Image (tube, rainbow, N blue to C red; front, side):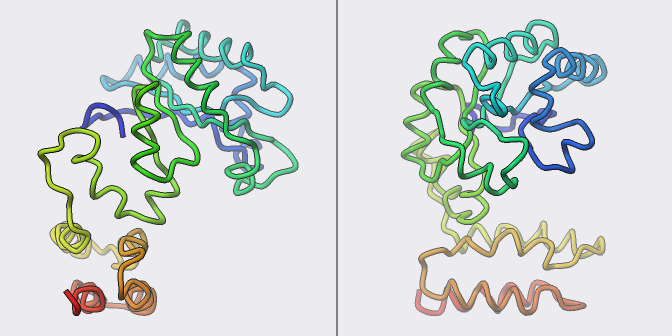
Length: 247
C-alpha cells in the first residue's frame, strides 16, 4: 500500500534468512555486506528504466544496532542509488530460527523504522511486519510513505477490498468480496486457456470469505476440486454458491 497506485519496480529482497538462501549468499545475510548490495542495485539501475527498491530487515544476529542499520541504508542509497526501501521491522537470526520463526519471534520495532524515515527524509520508506488491519496501516502512514502487508493479505484477502476507499479516496467504493472473485473470471479464463491449472490460481483466494457464512465450504470445495484435471470456472461458480445462497 504505497501512496501511489500502479507503481512498477524491481525489488531486491535482503530479508529472507533461510539456510538455502544463505548458501547462495543472498537474502538477509547480505545486510552484512552493504557495499555488495549497493553494487547489485547499481548494476540493475544501469540496465532498467524502472526503480530498483530494497526490502530489508532492521538487523541480523548481533549486528542489530541502529547505527548498523543507518550505515546499511546510507551505503545502499548513496553508492547504489536506491531511493526506496521497504523495512521489515524485525531483525533476522541467521541461525537458530526457521524462516517461519523469523517472521514471528524477533520483536517488532516500529519506532526504529519511524526514526529511520526521520533521519533519511529524502528517501521513500515503507514498513512491513505484523500489520493486520487498515487502521494499523493508517497509523503507520502518519510516519512513513507506504505500508506492505504480506501474510494478512494472503490469509485474509478481503482486507484489500477496502484499501482504495480507506487509504486513497473515500469516494471510491468498497469492493464486495463476491464481486472481487467474479472480477477474476476473465483472468482465470485467460490462464486456463494457456494451460494453467485452476488450483494454482484459486489457492491464493481461499481466505477471501474469512468470517462470512459458507467460507469453510468455499475453501473445502475449491481445495477438493480445483486441482482436478479439466477444472474450470464452473468449479468456482459452485464454490461461490456456498457464500451467496443466503444473500
